[in-house]
Length: 263
Image: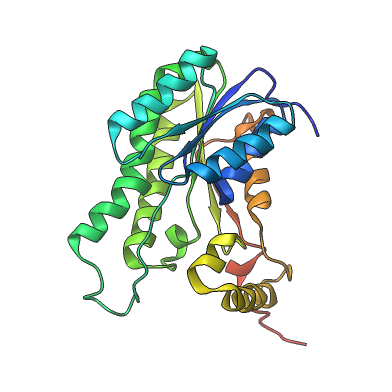
């Protein structure tokens, strides 16, 4: 594996497990020093730190809820105090509430506020506290972890889809405003086969969901957390030096729908 991020410092929010953990490990494997942020999953964060240290990289675990601006500042301050710079910010922390899209009474204003506080405002707050350092980097990169939900109005709830749509729009606005010093892009995963589905729906149901998604996708596979991490590393790295304001959909082609002429 290359060393595209040698000497660079990355903050990955919500990186105790899943996509965030895979991204933190992928960046570290290519030379980055990484802050692993978690809110409540301390044990998982420590396990991710162990994996990063096994590849010979430096990392710190920092507790913080990105919905709280003071926590965002502390996450950034920890990274800057340790390494004197921040070059990459991956806004991965996210939350949702499951609610049938057809049930107009399923969500309250408080549900929307909670989801937006993490998925949208949290990404903005982290960007704000890291902004000066990212500018000073000389090649600062922000990668927002969005979702296919923000492009097609699908997913766990209307509030979740709306929040990811807002995150995509914020990506465009930031990319325009923060150039040329900072590139801002988003990765929009479709279905991702992580342990989260097992804990949410049970192991048997998770296997069935994964098989269904794999069968529906033109590429006949499902993305894993590592596939999303590869997309993040591409957008954060030198091979994407002329890319900003993009939303990269990673879903094995599921958004294309079925074959219009089955055979």
